[in-house]
Structure formats: structure tokens, C-alpha cells
Length: 366
Image (spheres, rainbow, N blue to C red):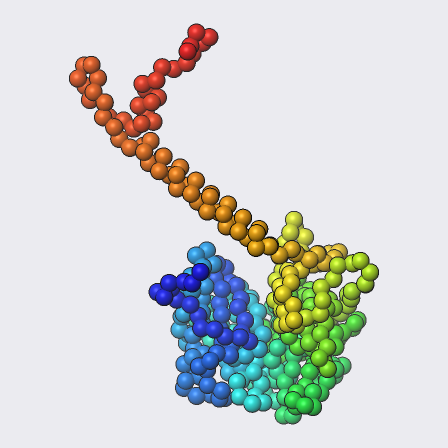
């Protein structure tokens, strides 16, 4: 069913992120048909100086203006939330070979942008896109962790000690499995000591916070057209991260197929953390992972008949509500009764029935 023309809808786009703060979803950027493929000009800044806001209880969208300069990495950036601020890292600029490693914050109360760390080829994570970023809280301090991604092979930051890189020579791109941490209090990027089974260089995976100090990576595109269905967990301290890998054991065990560019979200089922995974490149299925047990369950998609039955039951329920509302309206409508003593009695049907009908009491009541 199409929405009325008067209802506002954001323009189509891809390569963006949508994050939740309270009862609202915030969507910014992404590659759009009318966005100029340039590094920076007035038109690009103008189109990127708005945020699309969805009010979840009503499902209504509204476009709101922002203040100060927005990030230039509009596609494939990473986003994460700390209280009333959304943080945006990196992204593809929109013109050939331009990637960023800048970090911005966006305040949802003031709608103001703030550059925390500028794009530079001298230090920090790679200038890249399609990486993952999660929020950490360690010893009551806020951190951001950035993992993986890809960017230009040339003119990039120095390699991170211990990290691996894979060169896609056909497209002059570099995949990485870098792990960086950013401490908000000091504004510094650090390289934690990585132990355990580190994931290979990858892009287009999902990275999801599980607790204040742990996160989970699933899927992604690795190299030579290889896709992943492995699960990696990360346990952080302020100076280190321990990685662990979980793979499909085979046999009769349920396990999702390889994918990238999917969506994942953390949900709690009966107080047990689960990861919900939806679709992805080359697949349209839906899976639920019990994180404590590392057990997958494929969720059944409703058939056309089941969808029709659900719609029918919903309409039937709404019709019953409408009928009951009409009955209640009639029962509570004022009426006037004239008694033998010529007195006028004003009441509702409900009151009149209670007054006029004989009350049954005792065995002799009929």
C-alpha cells in the first residue's frame, strides 16, 4: 500500500546507517541520486546538512537541519551511539579513491556536528569504509573500537603492527583487519594488543556490542570473492583484545550460509542475549543466534496464506472493536422516561436497565 503524497518519506539511498536513540531513529548520508560525486562543494554540504528522523511510536519521518560542517565520508561510514551522541567514523567520499578516517560526533539534542579527529594519512586507522565500530565502557571510561574495512592501497596510513592487509590489485583497494581504540576523554587512537583467533581482512560484516566490554562480528566479504559465516567474539580491556572464532561444525547443526552486507541487532529473549541476523548479499533468510550457547536457529518466513490469515484476523479484530464502540455509544446515549407521576427521568440505557429490570434475589426470583 502506497503512502499518501502528503506523508514525508526520505529519499532512496544506500551505504548509510540508521541508529536508535530513545524513541527515534536517526539516518544520515548514504549515496543518493542527487548527491554530487565531489570532495566538497556547496551542494554536497547542503544535502549532507540534514538528518532524517523517524519517530518510532508513530512511524512518521521528519527531515531536520543540522549545524556546523558534516562529515565528508557519506557512504560506508561506521556509526555508534553513546547516550545522546552519535559517532561517525570514516566512509567513502563519493568521488574516485577518496576515503576518510575522520571521527565526528552528532548531538541529537542540539543537532550539531563536531569533528573529533580529522582525516589524515599520518596516523590512526586506515582511511577506509565498510568497517565496524562499537562502543565500549572500560573502568567507567568511554571508548570506541574500530575493526576491519577497506580503502585505497596508496596514500594511506602506516600499517598497524600485527594487522594483516590484502591487496585487491584489480581495484587498487586494500582490505585490513586492524583493531583500533579511541578514548573519548583523551581524544587519542591506540592499538591494543590482539590475542587469540583474529579475523582475516574483511569488509561489510556486522559488528555488534554485547556487553560494555565485549562485541561480536558475523559474516562479511573477505577476499577473492570469499564470503564468511563465521562468528568472532572480542573481549576488550583498555590495552588489549582477546579474539575467539566459532565456525560451522557441520553435520545436522543449523548454521547460516555465508553472507555480507546483512543486518544484525542484539535482542534479549527470556533475559538471554541473542543476535538477530537478517538477509544479506545472495540470501534473504533470517537467523537467531543464542550467544551464550552459540546455537543458531533459522526463523520461518510466513507463507502467503499465513500472511492473508494474519491480515484477516487483524481486520476482524478491528471490526469487532468498531462494533463494540458503537454498542457502547448507544448504551451510554441519554434517554428520557416519563413515569406515572409525570416526572421526567433522564438516564442512559445502562442506568435505565439497572433501574427498570427487577433484581433477581433468592430462590423465588424469576
